[in-house]
Structures are given as C-alpha cells and as structure tokens.
Length: 379
Ligand SMILES: *Cc1c(COP(=O)(O)O)cnc(C)c1O
Image 1: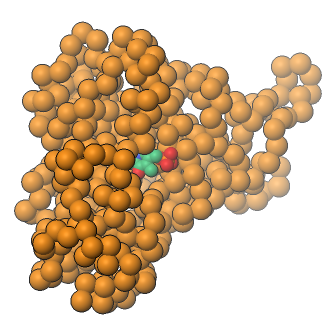
Image 2: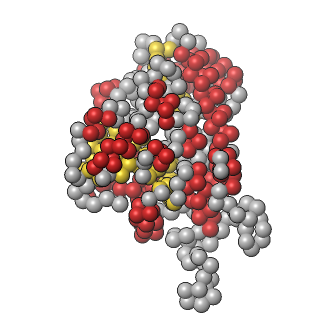
Image 3: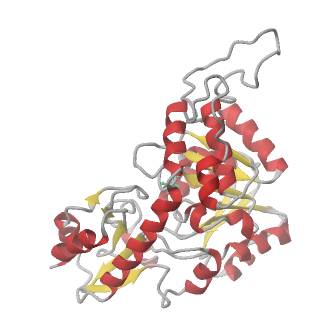
C-alpha cells in the first residue's frame, strides 16, 4: 500500500461493536472478563487500549515497520529506548541534539552508568573513531534543530552493524512522509508525535517503531513496566491528525521552498539554512534519503544584532512567537533566547546558534500572506 492509503486506513477497522467507521475513544481503564483469563485481548489500559492500539499500528505502518508503541511524550519514548541499555553501555550521538534529548541523556541516564558521546555526525569518521566494544547505540537526529544539518542514516547504520550496535533515528522533523529510517538500515524510529504527526498543536505524545522482534519485546515490556503511556483521547486526536499527514507535509514543503527562496534573496538576510538548497553542505545526502525538504527554516540577519532579531520576531503577526513546531499554523522562534538559552554563548555559537538566528516552522497557510508578513517585519 502507498503512503496516503496507509495514513488513512492502516490499523483502523470499523468498530466491531457498532460499525463506527472512526475508532471510538475507549475511555476505560479495565475490561470485563468472562472467566479468569478469558478476555477479548484487552485486560488493563496501561498494557493495551483499543484506541491507542489502532494508533500504534497506524504509526508502525507509515514508518514501514512491524511494531509501534505510543508514549505520554517524545521524551517518554526516548526514556523507553535508553532503558533497553545496561550500565556500562555507550551511546554515540550528535552534538547538535534536541535540547530535551541532551538533558535526559546527561542528567537522568548518565548517573545509571550509561556513557554518552556527542560528536559532529555529519562526519561519519568522527563516529567510527569512537566505536568500541561497549558501543550499544548510535542516536541520530536529522535534520537537526535549529541548524538543519543532515546526518547520513545509511552510513550510521553501516557503522552500527559493524559493531553490533542499534541505530535509533529521531524522525520528528522529517516525518515518515519524507524519510523512512527503517528502510535505510535503522533499528528504531522515534517521534515527538507532538509535532507533525499530531500536526495541530493540541497533543503531547511520543512514539517508537521497530521491525526487530527482540527490540519490540523490550519496547512493550518497558512501556508496560514503566507505564508512560498516552491516553485514548489523545490517541484519537492523532489518528485524525495522521489522516492528512501527506497533504499537510506537501504544503509545508511547498511553502517552505517559497519562503526559503524569498529569504535567500532578501538584502537584510545573511544566511538561510534549509536542506533543499543545492548550496547546503549536506544537500546530496538530503536528496538521497529524503523525499522533500520540509518547512523548517532558520536564517541569520546581516550585522548579527540581537536587537534586530528580537524586532523581527516581535513584528510578525501571522507567525506566532512560540516554542514547538509542526502544526498547521506558522511559528517563529529565537533559539539563542528561547530553546537554546541554557547553553553557554560560546558553545551555542560554535554550532551556529548566533544572536540573530531566527527559526521558522512554516505552516500551511497561504504562502503569499506568510511572505508579506515577513516582508513587513524585515522592512
Ligand atoms: C519536541 C522534540 C522532542 C521531544 O518531544 P516531546 O513530545 O516534547 O516530549 C524530541 N525530539 C525532537 C526533534 C523534538 O522536536
């Protein structure tokens, strides 16, 4: 089945009790058993809930995987992955990781004896140099936030195979419509469903997908044992959101391209970061592993003045100043004072997060209105 058909139909059957075409919100904690051990597959909703189950099957299908699991947030999904490891194990990850992932790795799991390395993953050599007998996982994020760097998933999978480690890809920015890491050799895909999969800025949720039987067993064991599951109402909202994922991402890509090109020729703009440009340092890899370049764009202003950037984010009207991304509405953010404020200036500047850097999550409004909003703010 092709993507659009799976997005709408996978995991979703008419309700056996009533014929309802939409999966009902099974707002229940428990299920009545006819006799001890004689039930319909559901015993307790932490373990399995029909609405969540439909969504887990749907997300697994669109990622071209066999098994899906949904969690109370993207970070709860990450928590489940790292709990598959043991004290002494090592993880190699990227040095421009999502801040929350960096925080859970270093402030939660490091003290349980798991070691994390952070390298420039655009250079596979740096990853290869760190591999040793304790390496158990390579944690990839691509495109990265907010610099839109691209990591070669196939190259990372090859390195992992050579040392018996697993590759987990945070696919939040690309979504399975643009990139399917399992097809490129990854073992686990992770999502902050909060962003594009939900798509309407109304849910916090995470998900994992794998095709590996051994990983799946651990994933469900930890999901049930740690209990960081998502509820049936949120599962329903995301099932609804995913039905239009392909249409939304098509428009995010179209608007993203128009706005990236507009910004690129603007006299007040120094540099635009968007993987669709041929001049982007990893454009060849982006073209190889992605089916489009999305609506996430960052740019810097000439002169690199903090006041100028703050002025622009204040003057826009259609773009709302907020953290997060991936909703139908356009958002604007200032990484240096918002998402990356806790990182020391010298360190964030090394990775490109300078004072005038502005990040856009381009929504699916009319592109002419969005450009005219930016035009006024930049004037
Ligand atoms: C938001 C985000 C997360 C964390 O997900 P939550 O749903 O906020 O817990 C992880 N990775 C990336 C790339 C994100 O954008």
